[in-house]
Image (cartoon, rainbow, N blue to C red):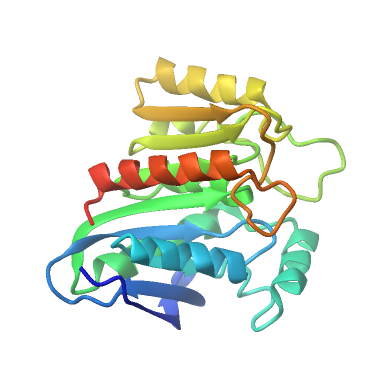
Length: 248
């Protein structure tokens, strides 16, 4: 099979019917059908690194899309500027996030190559939003990469207008893969323990992996937090998890 792919910036229908910018990457192969992956970007925004991750899922055989969650606040702005604007406004509202991810999933399912299955993955703030989406949108698999405040509470003085997801977790609709660093503060190992206990109590399907000597952001190849062994192992587990639940 060819590993060629195509990638482009498009507009999709998001929450409230809004037109939202998104980055779409697809295998350059029109035969057969395949699953789709919605990539939720981290707090630094809709940036080069997140687009590279989106292309990686296309190389793995999926139709992949990353909606620009800050498009309304700062259309056309540089990623850092857009993230600063969104942060100053308290972050992305949860209900709007749900609508945008639902729109992205619908776009993937509407492609002629779709097999009808869609997963979601998010990093940092996107990890929390991936869990939120999995509790609120019809999805087939979800991955939480070190998402802060799925459990626990925000520190005093935080600029973000959000709460944890403890009350929503009983509504988790699909299997969840969680990847965490044992040196992380948000989420801390204790907060991951709490999440695991809640999922067990409600009989949810989940798979967690934790990495020693690893903190927050260990997938970010352009940051000092990057950890080669943890990231490589994480990618293998993501590929296996989506391969089983989405098909490629």
